[in-house]
Amino acid sequence: MMSRKQTLASDVLAALEAKKLSLATAESCTGGGVGQALTAVPGSSRVYRGGIISYTNEVKSGLLHVPETLLRDLGAVSGPVAEAMARGAQAALSADVAVSTTGLAGPGGDGFGNPVGTVWIACAGPGGVESVLCRFQGNREEIREAACCRALELVLETLNGLET
Image (tube, rainbow, N blue to C red; front, side):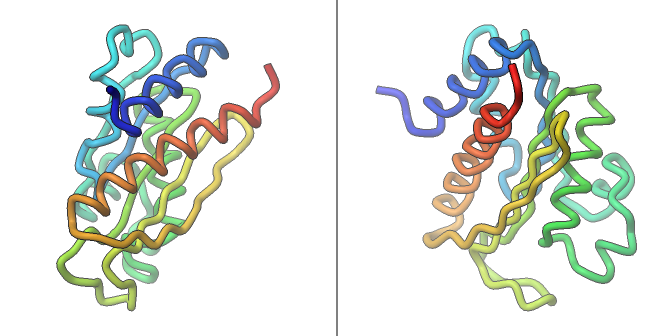
């Protein structure tokens, strides 16, 4: 039986193929988990362009072009940073749609008052970019798994909102 994450990944890939769109990922707290779920599905290369694991602020600013002022003023775990990450992956990988994750899987919070379990997820598509704030419970792995699933759900929501 497929896990929830694998089912979501399959659904995302099918929706992308149906709409003839491509996807990229920019992951921080999930460490490539979204990309792993997507590439576990045979044929994913038809629509999945690739991903950037931007675990440090230097990679977020250097590869994804997240403005350093956002990182300094808001911290890496914020909606504007998640949105900039998604737009950066969309541009860097020439994708129609991109999803990003940035958050705190634990064991500690950050210097901006965000508790463990805080995750911002953003999805950039032809109609713009949207970010959602999530507060997950559990240990490090449970938080990362929940964030991967929510990221895939957000891609589906974005795709379902597009005209065909």
